[in-house]
Image (cartoon, rainbow, N blue to C red; front, side, top):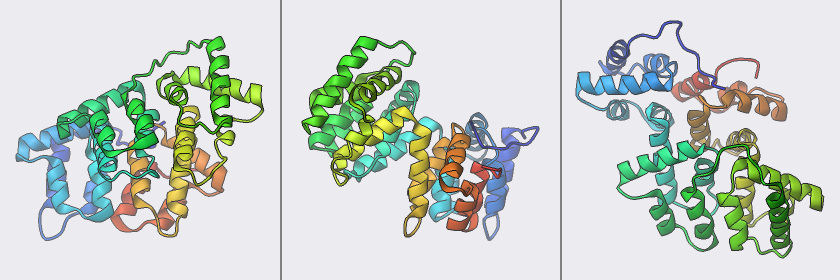
Length: 316
């Protein structure tokens, strides 16, 4: 569920554009006014604001914001104003260009989104960068990671609830054999994880535990420093409970020696209108402190005010 708060009656997009343009005038930018508008408008309304701003002032709102804002606050606002598909395309491109084995953003985009959302992100990627996401992933990754990530971003998963129980049992056995033999990048392991529906995979993971006694992710912890195993575990966590996975991303971003603003910004801007309420509840259960309190403690200034407006101030 979303954590955004809106006025009882939303102003017209033209009125919001006027307020934003006013915030850009004079000697200094009125960041508070920008926050009061953009942090309290739903995605369809923000889309209309951006369209109206270009019509009225002859410039993309993103360009105006880029000229007026700086640092982490600028990054958060720009991502927030983008459509979800455009935002994922930009995040994916940044990761692909600077790809490293420890980066999990492509997994988030490929697995924690619906099939339709991933398809929209790939269309936005091609429109913006004139290449396919699959093409760039293949060009910038290598080895086992290329074998895993290219099909992961290429698949269009069935999202229904139908499950083949005999297939779940046989594929659970296959996964166990490959994991036991440390053949983690075997083509069958990758095929199962990248092509099966969420419902089918949940049934397979359940059968794995019933047949062999351990959750599959526990058996994938044989080498904690192995980044490929870590990537497999991230895929499985995003399948079984993306909110729990993303809570951990936020927790690690905040608990680091020095906040990981990139991860914090990414999760809050991409999930505030999706499942931030559940992420906040999980964060509180895990840490005995509200996410609002942790973000307030670890961030400052306009960046702090913007993130807090997106996650909302409540009991969890």
